[in-house]
Amino acid sequence: MSQSPLIKSEIPSGTIIDNRYIIQQLLGQGGLGRTYLALDTRRFNEPCVLKEFAPLGTGEGGLEKCRNLFKREAKILHQLEHPQIPRFLACFEGDGRLFLVQEYVNGKTYSTLLRERQNQGRNFSEEEVIWWLKSLLPVLEYIHQHHIIHRDISPDNIMLPEGKSLPVLIDFGVGKQIADLNETTNFNQATFVGKMSLVGKVGYAPREQISLGLCSPSSDLYALGVTAVVLLTGRDPSFLMDQYSLEWKWRFYTYVSDGFAEILNKMLADTPKQRYQTSREVLADLERLGRPQTIQQATLFDIPAPGLTSESEPTLIVSHTNKLSPTTTTLSASAPQTFHQQISPTFQNQKTSKTQQNTSLNAAFIQRCRQTLAYYIGPIANLVVEDMLTEHSQVTPYQFVELLAAEIPETEMALEFTRRMFS
Image 1 (cartoon, helix red, strand yellow):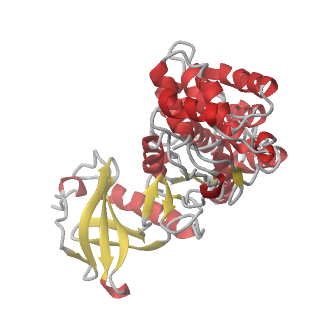
Image 2 (spheres, rainbow, N blue to C red):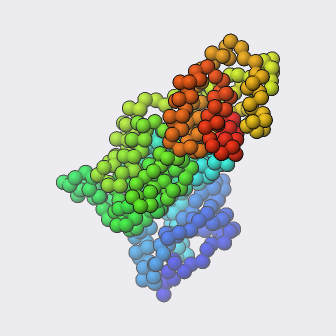
Image 3 (cartoon, helix red, strand yellow):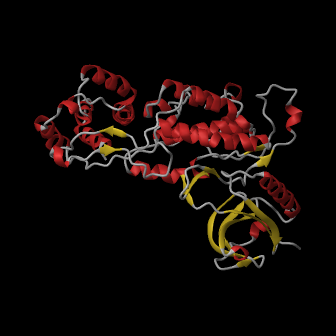
């Protein structure tokens, strides 16, 4: 009697599979099986991902069904040839186990990248997320044209490969080929394209997918929209939705332009008919916003740091040291020790030249002020910044931050705001 894949034990490190793949470590496991990091001995020990396919609940008589599901997934993956999707390398059966072999992506997931940014007191900016969406939407367009729905888009399943700038969509293990799309052509285009097994991450997958197992290209766009607002706010989806009305409240936690907010809200519409139906539609609306301001290698402001003379003054500039996107910015300056002891006296005694007095605040710096201040006083931050710009037209960036910090009631939070602005 054949043994079910379900009761097979985890493959130990060092085991050679199919006389070719050396198991290195377990990467993860779930309802569809286990995933291992392995070395391909026939490709100079190149790292690869070995996926053992064994859905939970497979009984003694379910091995043939497992094989059919395995072959279907292999066929789907074999169709995909895109630089932002891991390559499908092989499939085989051995020792009563079913395996898929895929390209290994050496990099970090966007959940990891977001945590790293939060440790620095910041999240992804509007410009970065717009660029990120423009980089991923063509990938979704590609898989949807191949009648494939990913169904599990989240920060955990999007990676930034080491040394590259374009994100990669991973984990197509739950992807299922849509049954004949032509069968739906006589119906409304927003009609669901098929009923599938219940798959998707709560908070990221739309209600119809979680509750009914129904999905369409618009459900992938919904999950991508959720991922975008998570990157913008740094908060879990459960904190971004009102628990009583089930309405999205993500704008309370970040500042973005109204035009971009409208696009995200349409992606997040609860009713599938009210969402974008294709990635191309989202891209078209993003293009209508106009190109986001490019601030790579541009000077945000150029003034003496506190306590330094003009001969030794450093310049606060954008440094393209982060590989996340072309618009990633970091400020090179020493953060003030405290809000009152270090910054305020310096402002009072600082010598300003005529050039410095006429310094206009850079648009990117102003937007960063809005985004950071919104964490402490909410959406009213936009109005506060606008009022300050009107009342204080000729101030240095340091003075502008001091004025904004004074609007935060709690002293410790005001200090934290100041540190975040100059970290």
